[in-house]
Amino acid sequence: MNQIGLHIGYWWGTGEEQDIFRMLELTHQAELDVMELNPAWLLRLTEAECGRLLRQARDYGVSMTLNGGLDASNDISSDDPAVRREGVRYCIQVLRRMPLLDLKVWSGVNYSAWLRVPQENFLKERSRSRSLSLESLGEILPVAEELGIDYCFEVCNRYEQFLFNTAREAVAFAEDTGSPRAKVHLDTYHMNIEEDNMFAALAYAGTAERLGHIHIGESNRRLPGVGPTQIDWEMLARALRSVAYGGAVVMEPFVLTSAHNAIRTKTWRDLSRGADLEKLVEDARTGGRFLRTLLGREA
Image (cartoon, rainbow, N blue to C red; front, side):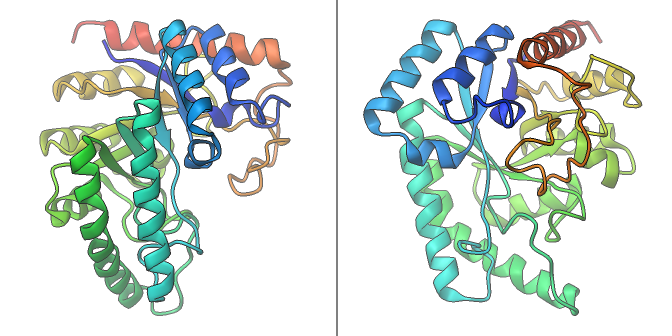
């Protein structure tokens, strides 16, 4: 059965976000298998702190994945050569530190800048930026291959990225890198906006052997299994089973207006239904149990 995880962004805005050990404890209290952290935390921790965090995670029976990407200062698809060089340096630095936490998957907008908005001639810019990103990845992906890390390109909706927005486009991009470690990261929130059929998209990426990571969330980024839904979760489970996806299934809810990234994620209203920390833990536990039951069923 797939391991079920939670992105630490769920805890942002609770007052616990400055302590990665506390967020690990909360994830464990929610009875989840995976804590997903971001590169900022990976780079912030000392080697000794990484060792302590890894030991605590193993004591809890929790593994970790990495999610997060680039911005305008280190965009590997930028027209500015200095910015691209900084992006390549940054990505290699992140990859080199990942073994400290036994991290095997890096997903996110790690091929361009998150929330980048193209200029007027966006088709020309997209083509140029795609080529520049692939050129930069030619330096980055050999390091991922050396370390045995899957480098997963997150497919975001049109409001967050423009190089690609569908599984088919992302698979083509991954294949153009020529690297077996170049994978695709699909997210039900984004697929709900962009894909004609999100379940066919999952099957396509899986059949192409490029499906490397999954994010799960309702169409408004709430946790799955804790309220009404308009997503056919049974069909999603069948799609994942059809391609024998064995990776982690990670919930990425953004529900609190108090989170430091609320403006960037456009969380304009409280999606937690007024939950305190105890209720947030309970809801995450409920979401995890829902996914275990869902994914554990026979096709």
